[in-house]
Image 1 (tube, rainbow, N blue to C red):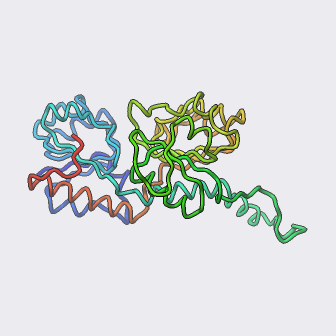
Image 2: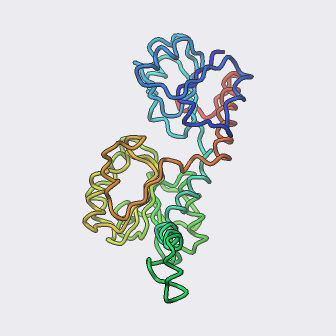
Image 3: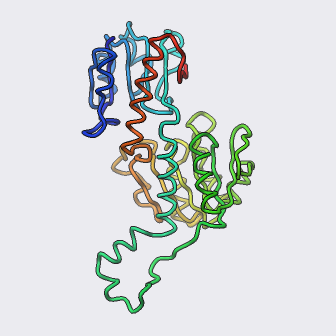
Length: 315
C-alpha cells in the first residue's frame, strides 16, 4: 500500500511521529503541500492521510488507485464526501480523540479571562508588586465562576466534557443542541434563550451549512454586554468582523478564540486589534498525549478498513 501524508507537519514533531504507519505500507510524507501540489503528490496513493488538506475532485483527479482517506481530525469539511462516495473512496475521521484536551483548553481560556493570570504574572515580573502598598493589589478584576451561567452550543463529546467541568465549578449549565440530548446537570434551551441567559457562551458544534456564521451581529446583540464568547470549534461559526464590532462597541464583554476562518492568521486579521480578546493559535487539540492518541486511532482505522470493517467512516 502506498500511503501519502499531505500535511504531516500539522500533526507530527520530534515527540510524536508517524512511524506506526510504516508497518502498513510505503509511506511518503509531505510537510505541508500547497493546493496546486496535491494532485501530483497523491497520484499513486492507495491511502491519503491528512489533517486540513482540501481533497476534492480537482486535487484527487489523478489518484486512480485511491481507496481510502484518513483524517487526523474529527471534522471533515475539507473532504468532498459526495465525490468520494461516487468514486468508492472510504473516508474515516478520528472522532473523540481530543475531547479532554479541547475541554481543558476551553477552561484554560475562561480562567485566563476571569483570573487575569498573565496580567498578574507580568505585574510581578515588572517589579510592581515590590512597590505595592498592599499585599494583595487589586489591579485587575477577578471573578468567580461559581453561580455563573455557561451556555454550551453543541452537546457532543466535547460539549458534554465541558459541561462536566462546569458542574464541578458549580456553574449553572445550559445548552443548545440540534437534537435533544439527556446530559446530567445540563438544561437544554433554545438558541436565543442561551444567548440571553449566558455569562459565558462556548461553541462546540461542527462547521456545516447550519452553523456557518451563526455567531453574527444579531447573535452578539442578544448576549449580555458582560458575556464572554469562547470559540474552540471552527472559525467559520463566527463572523470575525461582527465579533470585532461587538467587542469594540461593548456589545459583549470579551472573547477567547482558538480558531479562525483562515489559518495561519492573516497579516491584517481584524481580531488582532479587538479589545478584551484572547487568541491562541488553534492548539486546543494539540497536547502530546492527544496527538499520540490520534496517531493510534488513525492507524487502527486503516487496519479496520483493510480487514473490511467499517470504523469511524463518514462517507
